[in-house]
Length: 373
Image (cartoon, rainbow, N blue to C red; front, side, top):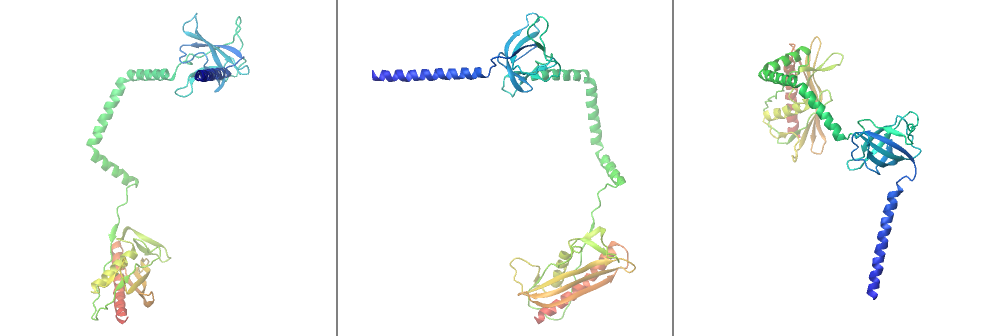
């Protein structure tokens, strides 16, 4: 008996809870309904797919009521009559517009009202319910509109099938002509580019410096030397072949340049000059290389002056440092060479000759300094 009483108690509890849940759902569903409001009739011409009793009525996107009745017009099967109950404060006018809209992909359609600036809607004579008449397109869904658009597009294509076919044939003919004459077309475009000044500038000619060979009867020092990259101002740290006017304006020869930046090029040719003198214990700074002495250079001039007597000028200051960074010796080397002929090749040749003079002096002075160190 005690077990039966427990089962009865549990069963009663479940029944009560279920009844309360159903009651809460019913109350929640009814809480959103209007207990009183203004009644309007809405007449649609055509389909109202998706609408049903209880569907929401929106005014400018705000829910103001619901559909209370939905039926076919017995006098005209093309029409659908809808009765809506809305909040009495809803400003429905005689020119209020109507549509059927779906909020999101899965939401139920709703009857939507829009604005209106006319007089408040009044019931027609002989009827107690004001009536709104929807446009013929109000009940058309998006898919139907898309189908109608595609049908119109198809009609346009049918009407213009022959002109479209001719256009495709002409395009194919034109593209074939372009393919057969692509070489001529490239020539025409190059000619137009040259005519308009839009042609790409030709690649500049590259020039290099020459190393010098120093002959010496003195024994070569048994020392290890590192030649650092010369320091230079920005105007000389360039690949341009620099010209200097009398008033100090610096320019570069537009159609020519050095094969590398001037400091790097000078460093490479000085190292090569030492090697040509059979002094092989020389190198540029390398990782792991232990050097006894270091040759540092400060480039002060590497240009051609313009004017009545143009000349090439090469000048740099040199210092020899020991392994502790102390200055062992220093000197300034400068050489000039006249530019006897106007032109890029003559200018480069003059700079190369001046560089050869200072490099020969530098190599001789450095070897002598290392021998006495």
